[in-house]
Image (cartoon, rainbow, N blue to C red; front, side, top):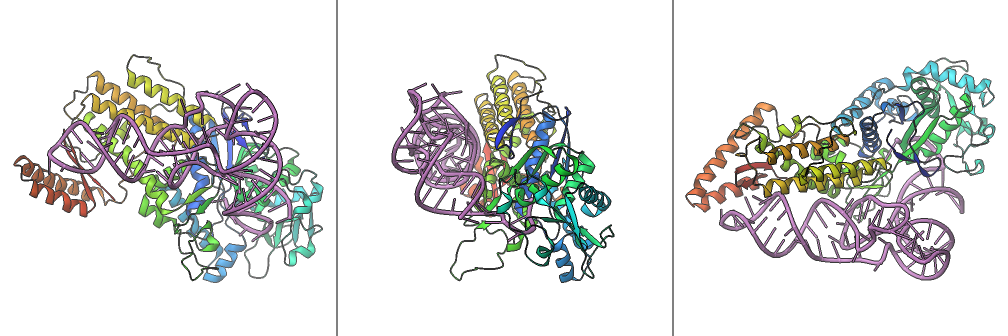
Length: 526
RNA sequence: GGUGAUGUGCCCGAGUGGUCUAAGGGGGCUGAUUGCAAAUCAGCUUGUCAGCGGUUCGAAUCCGCUCAUCACCUCCA
């Protein structure tokens, strides 16, 4: 098995990744509370762990990845009052929004998405076990976890029990200690509730994850992930509950992704409340729905899911990512180079003179699904050697705590080598596919696609996602060919005035023309 | 107040003891190419790694202090 190192928040160090039962790997990621539309910050964890699962699978592991949905809690109840509709309806709507966003960003590796309300019996059983073992106590209708009974409480977030501040409100009076937290909450009248040994009520937030991860992944599983903001109290509490209940560690590796922050020009969605100073104070700080952020789907429409995914993966997962429009535009600019190459590649390898679907052939390339080298050509072909070397560097970067940023830089190196190869060998639509230069190009491009796919990039053509349906895009392409032909005639007659009018007007419309020796192509430029 | 994170060139950002006279991207500039552009390729642009002190044969990388920014300690991916 390959040597992969992961940073464990519990030990605060990188450790060799050793699954409990190789090749099986269980991953649990804390998902959203579905009371409002997701914002871009919610996508960090899913994109990272989607990539981690892809990489672990690529490395030969059989990964089971669970992301939970919290579909009952205080905020949902409040929202349901406000909108005068049932909690379940809000949860349903917002889950659909979340899933749509995941799909756009290419997050499709999740195996189970359990909902808290589907696991009430397991949750109740879990609380009963804790109560029987003396770690929990009931106080008329509420059940609390008694922090003092767990001597190791605070190990994850490194806080002593004295540092804990409890929730205020009426619950505080019932607790034995201010650090104790609710496992079961008594229902107030009219609230959504389930019957339990302690009366009508609903589960506390932390116990849901303990119960569901246990139900699906077992007592101890390999990786537990989530945002850094969940480390305390959520994960600390999960750790305590599960550890105390089963007398075994909940998970081997705790992985936390960095949080996203809105930068100076960050317009994440209207900043609604407080301190909207009259001066044009730049909106910055943590992105959160309580500040009115959300509406990720509009960001996706503006930028495409792939661009957002790339933007997230460019930075190491444990770093803070500063989100702003400029960053996304920059990510888009760097992706363009790849997309243009795909078109170039297509022209060379395509038998058809002018393909209506640029880049298509790239997306049809068969690639290796495992990191085990299928064949080691060790040829004297410099491009092949470069590709092989890049592959090695890419794997080394990902082995080192999933360093996707460094891995992406390898992709750029490969891209440049491929373009250089085309330039130097004068490859174009006329090139014979049997020639060693073209075969070499195809082989090395296959490596590029293989590595990008591990990151969940360039899997299917979606960079033109904002174009219309297929019939329209065929028509558009035909019309563009017409204009390109007209301009070509003008240029051949050295009527540059006409040629430039065509090009400039198209530029104004957001269409760029790409003249090459072999002919002219076009792309959307904004 | 407590806990944790961060500070690398114009910007984003990788790098956690020697291979770092510091990856990659964006921007800008120059050359090749082009009717001119764009695209592509080549090159340049710019840093001794927040500051000070220490450990070490050797530090961006370890330790201490100072400064700054951010987050968590109430719900949050």
